[in-house]
Image 1 (tube, one colour):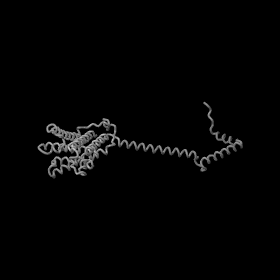
Image 2 (tube, one colour; image 1 turned 60 degrees about the vertical axis):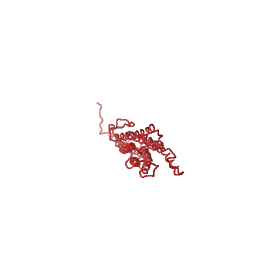
Image 3 (tube, rainbow, N blue to C red; image 1 turned 30 degrees about the vertical axis):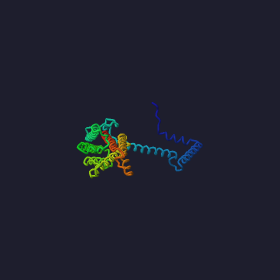
Image 4 (tube, helix red, strand yellow; image 1 turned 135 degrees about the vertical axis):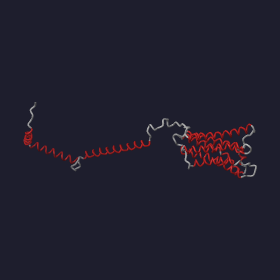
Length: 315
């Protein structure tokens, strides 16, 4: 083994070597020490503390650490908020988001299907009445639809109107239940006026304008005007909040389109009323009222069918 030194003589030897150094070397070491001291003061800005460059580096590093802490906290908060708003993958539906499939087991879907069936039955009755008038009576359908409510076949007309009113009321309930609109909204008020107008048309018979005006005929005419105007307005108000929706925008735009078609179908009657007010000619002599009324009725029944289809495809 190597011979170990005696460590007790090391301090004495070190002191002896220090005393044997030359004066020139001691002077050079003193000069070098003073140079380092001056350089240290210059870098530290004359404060005698930490050098200026080192302090800048520490502040820059501290700023990076603070920025990293802030970004980490922000990411953690965003992830927590997303977890609160987004359900788990196990809670998500299996079907695709774009697939709108009606569930007929739900009560609202059954109400909507019943409403569409009642509206279709009413339209079928009126179509059969027109076919009978054309084939059997050689009629050109120039008279109003309400003419079927005068005479022995009044019960058929009343039954068809009641079917239409019941289907419209059930459709209103389904629309509100599916949250397409609220009970306190313009669309609900307009649909309610449509239903009440149909009931008034069924209760009060048409006026025979060859006879003096009657209260029943005036109520029938007023109710017809309110009903025909209310349904297109209800469809426009119902579709307005959903026009830019990702899923229901297509149904909303389709509903608005049929509503505007119904309003356009009402324009011949408005033209007849304006001409009658200006010239004094009877308004039923300006246009063929039967044709205009049937065009308006077809467009409004189609609007109801579009709304019912929308309700069935609502998730």
